[in-house]
Length: 558
Image 1 (cartoon, rainbow, N blue to C red):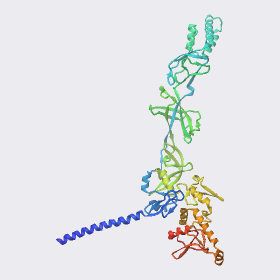
Image 2: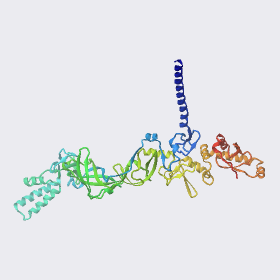
Image 3: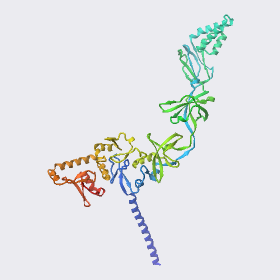
Image 4: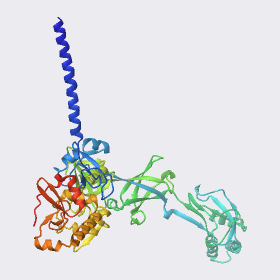
């Protein structure tokens, strides 16, 4: 019994120790492999890589580590040009949302904002026909409704005395039948008084009472809405001054703005549904035959609609909603936010699955109701990004991809980044018949200081790793040191003898690719794995000695 108990204890201890040791080994082995740093790169210029942390020489940004488990770094090389890869975690962080490209129905509604205005054909201006001054005035202000014949004010004008006396005398002679055609004289004086602004009712009162009226009455010519009042008590006015302005409200105008690409859908005589959003009233309007006007400030076409206004519900300067029903043939459409429009081209990101996205150039047609017609570039059934595409575009630039600029992109001769010529108009240099574009001012300055270093003939792309190291260290210090080394070699009194006795042996500097004469006195060199490497400066030699395996090449000479 004791042996059995001891045996059970040993089994439990062995199981516990084995489980703990397995977990420890798994934890130790798994973590470093998944988080091992492969290299460091610039987040703005991913083409620049370094084996140690620091700052990028092209833009001064802090270098970021790239781990072995990074999906972007692991899968980017196998993707076609222009296609980028974004991990699921990063998609969730930037809020990527997709939708299917499909053909939509042909019925759409064009919605516009309209402004109510008075019909200019139904606006009446009351002007003074003679000089005078206001005697009495009624409490009627701008914005108030008045009826036809309603008294507005009365004024005194000396010019009315003579015509009134002549009118009374002509009426008396007509009754006495002094002259056969006396009625013509009466009609002439009546027209004269009406022309001075006398109301027909007051004229009839003078004819009945045969009394001269001291004050002339101003009455509303129509039922309408007072839009202007320029008089006050005892106000003196001159002939021709505007005293009142009254607008009829039975019919009104509505002005609406159309974008240039929308104006083709609206024609004269078309009907629209007008809605007052607060009053919840609906009206039917008709597009006027008047040619639409172009507004250079808003860059829109201003159209005019005629609308009946029963009950005088609408008033001038109100805002209303205008809706035009439109019929389009079925077409491929996408949400407007899915299209990145730079002004030069339009781009849509197509979801290829497994976290890969293809920037696709598209051509668009009509745009309305937050939908855009796609005339070329997409096919029905493709899945596109409708949210987060601005951040995807930024991510594509961080990965050094084309982001839709495959046809026009150029390569920065200094750092190798892809550059859009349209966006680098100030960062360019001309050498001969060729123009070179740069991603930053620092790359342009480096090129301008020594173009031959970066031109293909004198700077072959044979040592890509060395090229990146040279950009990290800077050009000016390296060039100065090379010049100093050559100057010291020429100052050696035995140099000419040695060079005449020994044939030249030219080797390539494994760091910068420059030619080095191994026969020069004091030439810099290093031994590695039984081979001798020659350098143009101590900086190149120091860089090589730090990690010789990185620059190991066959030191062929010529």
